[in-house]
Length: 239
Image 1 (cartoon, rainbow, N blue to C red):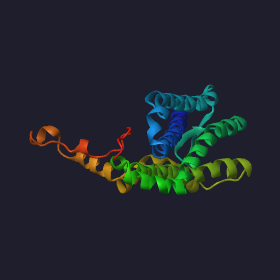
Image 2 (image 1 turned 180 degrees about the vertical axis):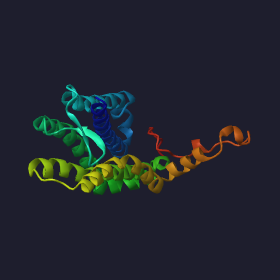
Image 3 (image 1 turned 60 degrees about the vertical axis):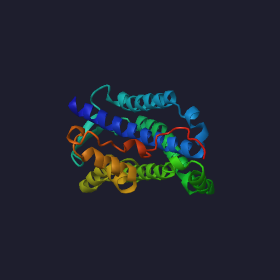
Image 4 (image 1 turned 30 degrees about the horizontal axis):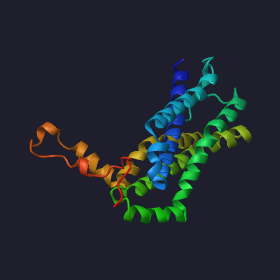
């Protein structure tokens, strides 16, 4: 039973993470392309609905094959419990396509916008008009990099399990399976390093968190956190 719960939690978290990255990409896409309509299109209510929807999809995807508590197996190659796809290949393929394709398609469309001439014009627009929110395009790039890292990291694992093992019925080296699985899991930690390298605001606030507690600092020293642009989405005033 514990193995089934582990497989359930593992698949749920990975699915929810994929949808969360998709929503971040869509959020930045709307913020950069239509800043004047952002508060209407991406209101807090709609964002909350998307979060709830993401978790419902993730939980629903995992529940059916685990109701019997016999569809999860301990994979010695990867050292973690996984859903046994051999018992319900049709369900896993159908549900996997329905869950992943819309998310990956949204990632692709929103990421492709970064390489268009329209986005280059938006860069000039932010530099001249929305100066106080000029970090939005850069944060858009960072989110795109995280989505790309997530997709590339999980691609070998998907190919090995769906194409090599299922379609061709070929045995795969244990080390290769271990490497492919944990490469995908490592994306949860790689985002921290992506933000450290690419985001100046993240580095600044991370250093602030690592400093002494506020009660150790002089009382007359005020934090300059409020003066920094941390990409809070608001409707800015034109110059």
